[in-house]
Length: 121
Image (cartoon, rainbow, N blue to C red):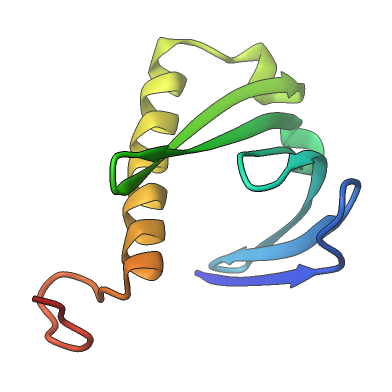
């Protein structure tokens, strides 16, 4: 799977355009910044053509000497909104946990499990 992102801007109404290739199929989409209140809130609308769109909100707060990031995602339009159910919410939850684990590794300077590069004590 090839994934290419292009950041057009970072202000509200900014757009990330992307293409995702799965075998011979290529899908395009874009994500629009709908609201940003630095450093705590980022709200996005991910648009995926015929699949519809979803609202993705990130809430970032100090948590002791750490940072707590909460992700809330809800389908807005299209197939995702029509088929929205508990099973879809479970899959989204798994995706969010994976995404947040990658974000933690990036921001804390850690590398994927099983490697010693950049290890911290």
